[in-house]
Amino acid sequence: MEWITNPESLIALLTLTVLEIVLGIDNIIFISILSGKLPKEQQNKARIIGLALAMIARILLLFSIAWIMKLTLPLFTILSQEISGRDLILIGGGLFLLAKSTFEIHDKLEGEDHSKSSKVVKSFTSVIIQILLLDLVFSLDSVITAVGMAKELGVMVTAVVIAVAVMMISAKSISDFVEKHPTVKLLALAFLLLIGVSLIAEGLEQHIPKGYIYFAMAFSVFVEMLNLKSKSKAKPIALKNRFAEEKGK
Image 1 (tube, rainbow, N blue to C red):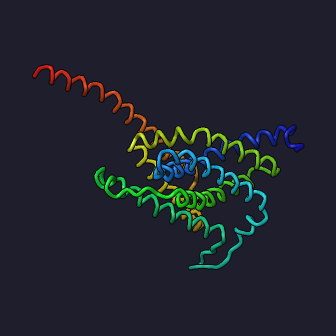
Image 2: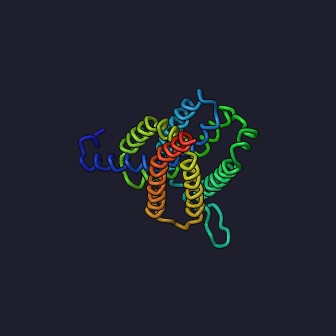
Image 3: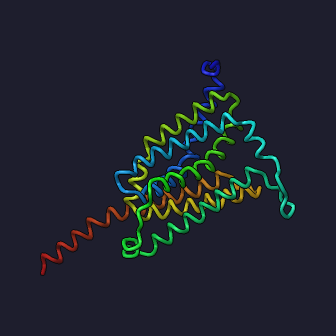
């Protein structure tokens, strides 16, 4: 625990914690969308368990650093492209995200009547299993980032625990906000499509700078916030005009 008194280690802890929170936002969005399929009384429990599983997966992977490093060794070659264990996990996770997001967007765009008639409440176990599968993919990316940034295992584990604690506190607010605003949910699903594509590209050694992805997401969120603000201002005016029309009649 000597790193606690080391200024460089503390700076690494702060930087890594912020990065872990940023990398965990897509995880929260995914967990929020999946938990939304459950009955209201089970949603918060699913979010907490999902994030707890994410934390456990990341800590276990951190204690298996040697194994993680071996995942980057080529297993086989396809069309002169070397594929490692890490690549397979990223590609598989990306394809899963693309499929899941596409299904959710299709279900959302079918309309309210279709949703009410075809909506099936998912079982708690199936939702947790899906969360666990994606946690493993997101955790691998997060752990590799941690290993590249910090030297001490204590710094990495502490950063993960703090980041997950912050995510647990904010998960309900984010989930409620996503559920309350349908357009935000569609935007979140679009983000998951983007993340899925970036994971597949990463698995095929086609690196997309994270800065570009985060900028695109931040700009989209900014535009959506302006749209929501515009709608909130327009609603009272519409109600006022309607009241005036009814009064005139």
